[in-house]
Image (cartoon, rainbow, N blue to C red; front, side):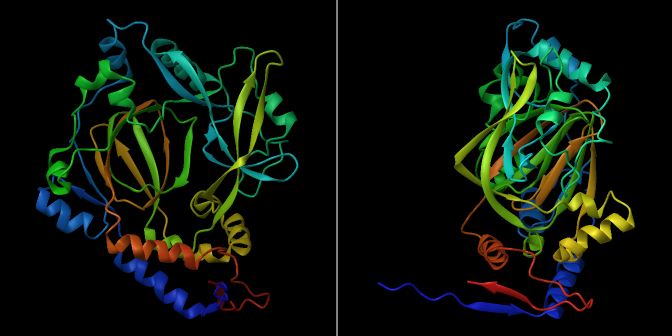
Length: 376
């Protein structure tokens, strides 16, 4: 049976501009702040169906890291699996010394809860690695050279710790803490006619970052203490964001050499977003212009910042892109409800991803943008 020949589709620049304008004016609006929890009907009709995030202030218990320690006074030997990186950037694309890009995972380290908290607080006092003389990749992250990895190692093998298991860890790994938090979110349970697939606890500080990605879950993200900072892009921006397929790797610390290393995994490939939306928000005009010059489709995305404080409940619809960090020591819990793949929004989103395999065929030396060509 012969294969169907591939065809090219040309998308004119003005059509991309029109689409981006629609996404911006109709979808990427400021996140709505609610004064009270929505009813199940309002939640489904006004937010889930329209894929619109919202925040409810003072809607979740305020519980600090010290409260968690007190709760564990009868379980002093409780251990947990913590994600550890040399510089706070794991689960993201990093460039190796030979120029190859990989998706790199953090080291997973089993550690006692109290010891983890002590190490987490200690790392806040340590100065950030000096990158003045370190080579940076195009996303302004240090290239993972042997020199860099050795320079940021310490004799105590601590690294940057972040509890971010995403595996129903509150109910599975941290049973003694379950009673401190709601078991689920009532209005979401009724709207989805289901309980959450996973309830995850997150503990970290400003040293760690979760790179921009999307989840196939309806997400109720709740801050118990501290402050979370999200960078968001609506699903419609999938047309302008660049995903690439690359091999995976993992950080690990060598006790004998007192040095961080990268362990390659050539047999496992990952598709991850390469576009660095933060360059559009946190850099000066000259750096922004240079980055957009190399990634011209990014001029059409709609990034926005959302800051969550203690007590906030945040609805993050499925398929919204998000980057997450903390501005201080922070405890958060999120409730993941399964996404309905029968939804037309999945078909639409998946089509946008297929239409944009490269995300870079859109440029012109004379300043006039040529049509984007896509091969299907």
